[in-house]
Image 1: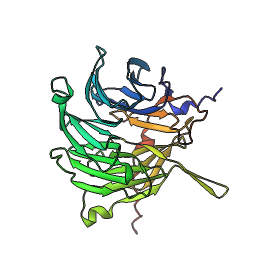
Image 2: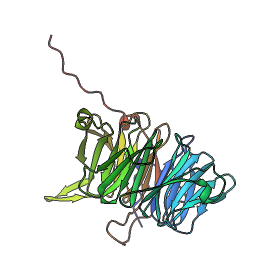
Image 3: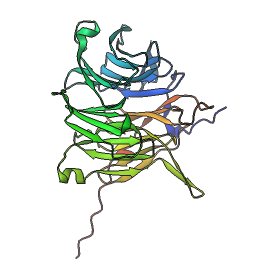
Image 4: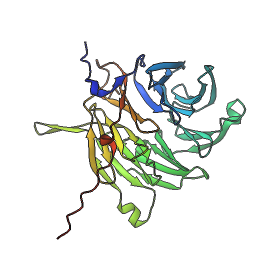
Length: 341
């Protein structure tokens, strides 16, 4: 019998996925939460009411999901398909296909397009308003240097992180080639990339307990602001254990951000002042994904073993929704030196 996590973990959602959770996301319009899983499902919850509102079954593990609006969403599947769902009717259709598992899906409100990244080393843009049939919805296919691991959007900026520690930055208004081709400033494999809500750059996490804070501005002054820091590590008897940082989520109001690691911890950081603001009590297993609600009042946490140590007995996959206290996420004002009398 697994020990029940302390109530401070937040409220556990009923009817969780039965296998690893690949991602979860809050809607931009409500407290609805979309969850993708290796159990071949996408689930829609009302996180406020703790109700499972819908479940969609795929032909393979689902590696990512996102909302279109409150009534529909998209998913990225290991069976190479990109799917669309209409929640109220339970209707689904295939938007298109890749030549390998689809790892990431994002919806751009700015471009009105769905963007997918795959292990087939391509990025594809789709117009969901196109008539049904993949040929009519595909806007473009863009070759990437390696398999796509993570995508993030802010405004017209699209950041693509691939295997081989490569990062491409695109302007969605001109996808013919990347605006910037970069290499991760971290030495190890990229796990997650997330753009800053203010549109000035992105945070990147790696399998080796580090996060890099990057900026789009390529001027000397712009690049002088970038830095990286260690996190999700523990030191015992002189030995360091380093954990992958699987998830990054920015607070929509304050621009501070949470990270989740294979150590089962969620930390909240103030990137501007380079400080940790808060650490939540330990979750039952690895943190696979994180998402703040649109108003920043709720934080959804996927406690789900990510097989970093191979197949072994592990805690059941669970989703916790916690109420966020302002003190956990609001930057602390810098203490100014007392002026001389």
